[in-house]
Length: 67
Image (cartoon, rainbow, N blue to C red; front, side, top):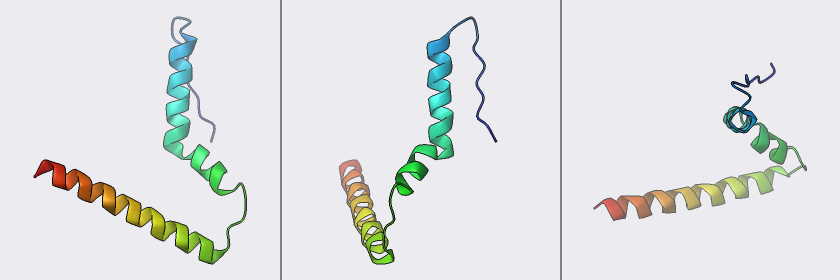
């Protein structure tokens, strides 16, 4: 399925911005980055754990700010 954007009134900059948003929403850049090289399963688990810790710290920081 191809991503399409129509150019209205010759406004190419806006069309390009919309295209980039649609592509990012579909997850194409992250998918390309993930497939760049092979990660061993242990490395994948380790990175997922690090990411989870980072996200939980971010959530805790924002929750502490609200209180």
